[in-house]
Amino acid sequence: MIFRVTEKFSEDGRFYYERAKNLKVKDFLFDSKTSLKEFDIVVDCVFGIGFKGVPTGTIADAIKCINASGAYIVSVDINSGLNGDDGEASIAVKSDLTVSIGYFKKGMFCGKAPELIGRLTNVDIGIVLV
Image 1 (cartoon, helix red, strand yellow):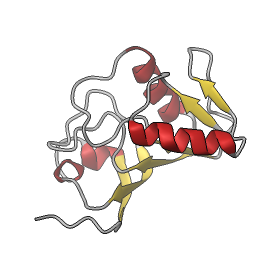
Image 2 (image 1 turned 90 degrees about the horizontal axis):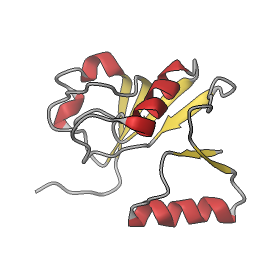
Image 3 (image 1 turned 60 degrees about the vertical axis):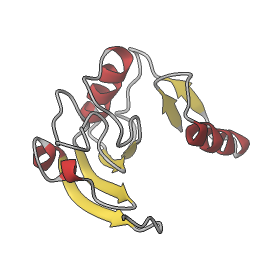
Image 4 (image 1 turned 90 degrees about the vertical axis):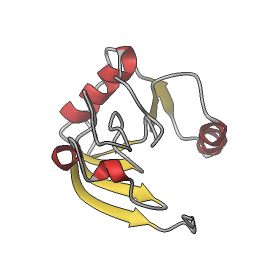
């Protein structure tokens, strides 16, 4: 099941969303009545590593809902709301597991990150840093 916080997608996001829809994965637009308490696992992929600033509105509500779910939370690449450069966050997902994609980000080890990231692992997808 997919809970979207917006109708907008990145190019990659649209590609994978369409793949999920073709597989008949149900999707819903997140709103103030959404609850995630019935789920054992929640995968957080609201924001990626480019996020900076303060989540507001529906996105802030979604982050609060994820944190209040009681589920095992897996963040993809970096916890939504967490700045990948400095580890700062005003509101961010608190994960049980964060799966970094390609390489660890500096912000995963400083600022508020140690309070927000439970277990941290990296998946090598062939990105070479130069």
